[in-house]
Length: 536
Image 1 (cartoon, rainbow, N blue to C red):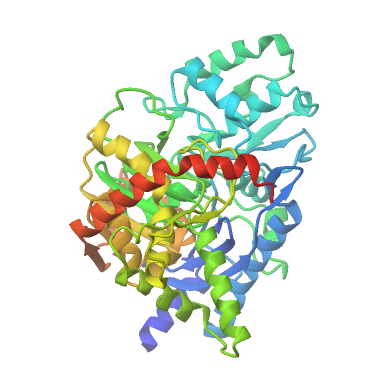
Image 2: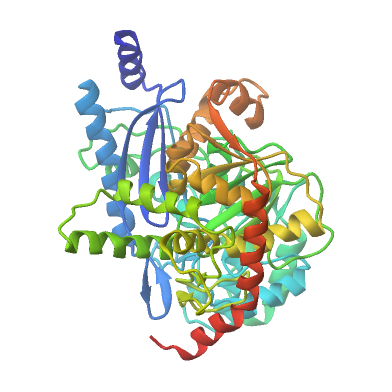
């Protein structure tokens, strides 16, 4: 133990650490790791998006405050545990929710509020671009937001100097370099696997499409430069160091790796960047990513084609809604318990309530729920309207209630995954899962295994999340051997001794989920009516 502490202290003082900071949908987290990829300290900041003039957004004040608070908490933990003030770090990386739209002018002013992935207001643009490119352009993608703004003739467009993602913005703020990792870039605009850059022919198509508008920019001029994992994409400037560390102890000059999206860090955190592997990331939204062996036979609006951080093609199924409605219901149960005079630990509440789902009828007892806090692209609903429905014949009890809410959290995802596995016959050797839901053992894994009808593993590192994955990418940049691939680095240096628990799908659960999905599909007319008529 004494030896381990001494080695950690040496890593901290010697600048042999790597730091990952990820901006998730509900939490900003900073994770510092040593040169053996073990977590030394972490810090976090809770935040929430909000609706402003019909747009889901976060404000810049919260972005900077969250960055500084997460770093400060991590720094203070190091000081408490090891008596050392952090002055230098070996490497740093920033990641965030993919997609969305941040547009800036030449002075660095944000021209319109940050439009997040959660907005489903770009349907016309996404469809037109998909038809134009013959490549699926989801509503969340940055190019869809830009083109929708063009169709709407928004006033800020002539002033644009650059557009980027949230991770790209943080990286630019702290390094001065307008860079983006290829995985995050693939959620902005289609990537050409052969050139590892934006698809040049599609860039030209876009410029021709908007040529009559007379904007003083071409698309390639306003997109950030694409970098591959392992490359250095800048270094921490003096201004950047002072922004990140309010105490001004941190020295500038730290190498910084390409900023990535949360999809890419999820792949790294679950060691699923090899072909035929996949991962599922669970949070406010849910997405599954399968690294493909070959191109899909046709365009599917439900399937995003993105890349790993090292540029391999990935089929991605992304559902806008996952845990928000479940969390809201559990918050209600917590409020009830406290009203009864019982102070309840939130982690214990989740454990007890989620485990009730294991006692339920296989199909959830005929109950039906749509946890749509926001619109859902896969099922074609533009606006959110959380809805719980039952009939007089339904078996309404707590176990079925909980199973139904877990099923619906993965309902839209299951519809999209069916395209990959049944229509495209995509082979999947393993699925690795991560996210807060899997902190409760067994339950989430069993539900996801039923949804995917495939073995699902949760590694002991799963709780570390995307910030840890980003720290691993920062470490890869600094510590890889010559010509060492990201896949080999992860296998040999990060995950070789990591334990994992694999669960195979229970066919009773699989059939139960299929019965629920049949009910879920039929009930979409009810959900659409709620969106159209229930103006709550």
